[in-house]
Image 1 (cartoon, rainbow, N blue to C red):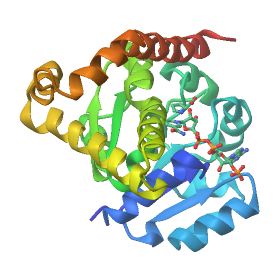
Image 2: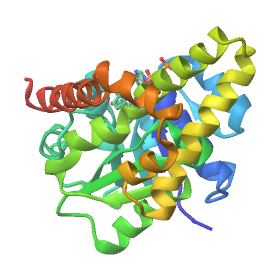
Image 3: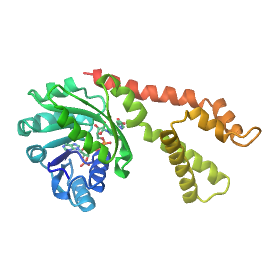
Image 4: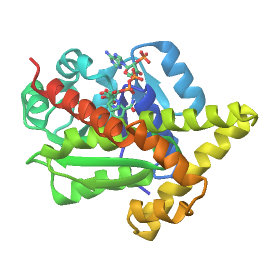
Length: 271
Ligand SMILES: NC(=O)C1=CN([C@@H]2O[C@H](COP(=O)(O)OP(=O)(O)OC[C@H]3O[C@@H](n4cnc5c(N)ncnc54)[C@H](OP(=O)(O)O)[C@@H]3O)[C@@H](O)[C@H]2O)C=CC1
Ligand SMILES: O=C(O)[C@@H]1CCC=N1
């Protein structure tokens, strides 16, 4: 069990998913997590959902935290960082999860030496199945990185990557749950069109995606080989595969995902 205080500035979609993930994994007790947000409504909802301490004061969260997550939108950084910078302990490890905010830009905004981890998680953190990437600045020790990685591992899988790969990470894991939800929704719509009740259709579609993903992760077999094993000669699946190829599925996914990672890159170079 961790003996640190973990703070969250911002408790929206991603902040709340990580709070839920950390608590579900029993990495810390509810008394070791503190969160702030913009509105009392959000904080009341977070308090009743997770029984953690909440406050409207970002300064309080900054003062108390040993590990401090910045989980506000990137466009709030200019407001929040000057507010909290004087209150952050020198030993605090700051973890930014913002798309498009580089290590250099965050260091400059704090205007003092900080221990900084730039991370990119995803919302499946809430159910213990996040995929996260981490990169660090020069002031984070190996032991501190291991500690932060343990937090991310508590709600999924986490790997250290060079910062040059973060835009690709945003495309392949940070944002990709949204594309997969579209795919699941479309599969369910087709089943509904063929007469299946809606709730059952979501279950069949989602479990099939989950199972297919698990096959890739656990068998180590190439996705093309796994696809071939489903396609019986003259059978049903190859008809769907042919229609998907006519619709340009792979080209569409590659183009969409690269638009996503380009946006992440553009955000990090915008003034
Ligand atoms: N959503 C995702 O899938 C992912 C998001 N991210 C990153 O996570 C960050 C947050 O995104 P997301 O959770 O989706 O955004 P949300 O809009 O859902 O949450 C933002 C949170 O920030 C709070 N907030 C706004 N202004 C302030 C302020 N001045 N002080 C303190 N808290 C404030 C909001 O409070 P209130 O609720 O009261 O308005 C809200 O709780 C972004 O930087 C994004 O790039 C990274 C990976 C995945
Ligand atoms: O859409 C966004 O900007 C954030 C970053 C990754 C996922 N959601």
